[in-house]
Amino acid sequence: EARTVGAVALRQAEDDPERLKLVGIRMEDAARAPKDGAIIVDERIRGYVCTARKSFTTGEAVGMALVEAPLAAVGTRLAIFEDECNGRRRYAGVVAMPFYDPDGERMRM
Image (cartoon, rainbow, N blue to C red; front, side, top):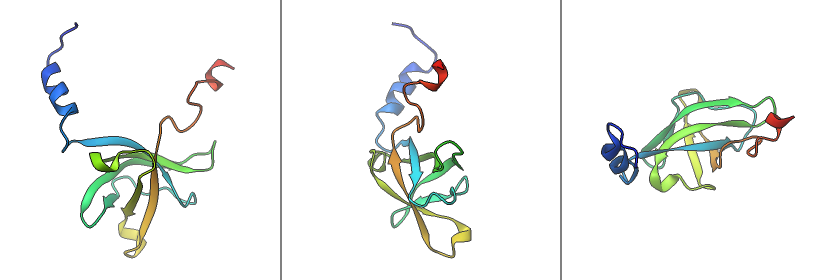
């Protein structure tokens, strides 16, 4: 077994139920991706959008977010709040990553 500095701490962090999880998200409204740093809410802050863009290949608004572990399951609906949305929430679903070409077929062309 290879040992690295911090391996014990990394193992403990992986099992921490309070640790935020990185997930893929796909917006329900593909017209615009949320701003980086937008917060994910469910009566309180439960995470935030790390990065999101509109995919030129798929035409979908996709990104990644850090969310509390109970929200990390594929299919979970996330409510996203942005300052520019006049108090309305935008919605995204947690999806598997990668978003496009998961088997790397395009890389083998």
